[in-house]
Structure formats: C-alpha cells, structure tokens
Length: 67
Image (cartoon, rainbow, N blue to C red; front, side, top):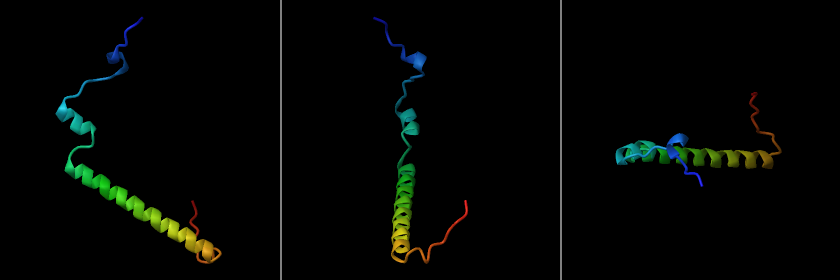
C-alpha cells in the first residue's frame, strides 16, 4: 500500500493567523459579506416583483435591454 504525500498535492498546514486570512478575515469582512448577501436578496426580490408585474400587464411595461 502506498502512502499519500499531501505535500505533493499542494496541501499546507496553516497556523491560526494564517487561517484567518483564508477564512474570510474578521468582523469587518463578515459585515461586508452580509451586506453583499442582503443586497443580492433585495435585488432578487425586486427582479421577482418586476417579472410578476410584467406578467400581470402582459409585458406592456417591460423595458428591454440590448445585450
């Protein structure tokens, strides 16, 4: 049976301070990520409401954007 050499796979051992950098940092980074999550949720709700309104009006008030 062969042994698995994790060093060959690029696996490294991190200490606590190094883990913080890989794990998203501290409170500031966590708050930023939650603000982004909230913005995405609000935009998703707005998009859903926009689509529902478009369906209700038969697409009469839909703004089409060229890509």
